[in-house]
Structures are given as structure tokens and as C-alpha cells.
Length: 114
Image (cartoon, rainbow, N blue to C red):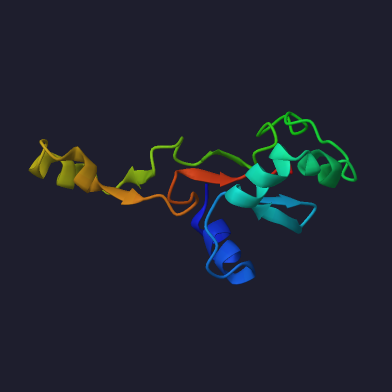
């Protein structure tokens, strides 16, 4: 959901790709490891030591950590540059907006509540 998370993952686990499972900051494994652990029942034993957190524990984001950008409403566009430019080329309206600087590449921002 965020390029910074991908960079952090690359620093913590060079050469690994998503998905990766972390529990309270501890790396449990990637897709293949988790699949194998699930087949033999080990994943449940590994995760039993962690407290289960409901996905909807945050009323703002539902536990995802991200919300649609409050500034641009998820459009990824800032305010219009100016009316004079809009009159010059009505066929290409997106050319007259600046990129929103609040949200990430997916038009999301970090949840302020959690």
C-alpha cells in the first residue's frame, strides 16, 4: 500500500518479495514458508503466543493503517493551477492540476488515529 513499506522490507529482508508475514515486528516467513507451516499445523502454534487484534480496532482505517487522502479525496490531484490555463485547453483538464503532496502513490495517507 506504500512504497516506503516496500523499501523497509528490502532493507530488513534483502532479496525477499511480498507477501511476508510479521507478528509484532518478528519475521515469521514468506509465502512458501507460511504455506508449509500451515500444512503441518505449525503456523497456529507460532501465532498462538501473539495476542489477536481485531481488524476493526481502529475506527478510522479498520486496522489497515491507511485512509483515502483527506486533502485530495483520493484523486491524487491538488487544487487547479488556474482558470486561465483551463480555458486554453478544455480537452485535457488533468494537465491543469498539480500532484497532491499529502498522499502516497496510491492516493492514501497514513491513518492519523493509529
